[in-house]
Length: 271
Image 1 (tube, one colour):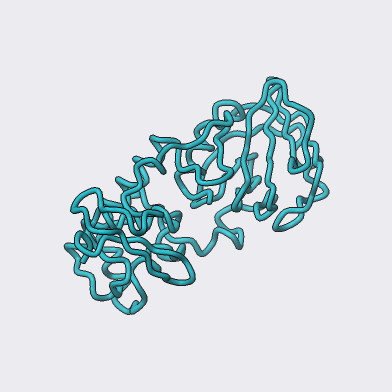
Image 2 (spheres, helix red, strand yellow):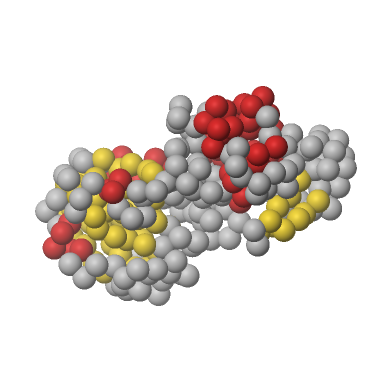
């Protein structure tokens, strides 16, 4: 957490306040993130205009000419938009102030996020260069997924969470998409037919689109750019519901461990 829907929700909330606007001040309160905030970030950003705010996987990309400010929310990071920001608190790391008076504040209690500067095209940055296609893009389709998994004996859920195969499908949304597609998460990826992959691609897109429309999921700390919680967790079919009845057939939802993570499925609806 946050996963792709939460990051995209954040992007949509922040973009209107920063795109085409000039950065007038950068205040760094605490450099300690997964990688330290660059000491020269104020010098790099102040006076520059954010031309576009994009998302690649779970990264937010503030496009500034040929350079990019790369932001990752980690596990507990948030970006809040303020007109009159409160005094910075313990877990507030960076403020970006714009010529409109808007202040964008990055907060991260667990400090697993990042705020990095890339002077060259962001797609060549080591964090982004090896990523697979976006799950909502045309490049992510059944033919691609079927072809890319023929040698994969690992569970399909683990394949779906591999960012080299497809980006942004984290633990929660992989579980929910596999339920919608009727595919058991433990099934080996190379045993899944092209027809079943067609259903899975559609289910991934439907799940992520629904989650974005509901503002993502709030399980712990996540809030959007206005400080509001997401609501998709109210619609989970399987995630976190082990022992509860399936919403379709009534069978108890089961939980297994895959790749060190909890995976949830219905033993009747998913085969």
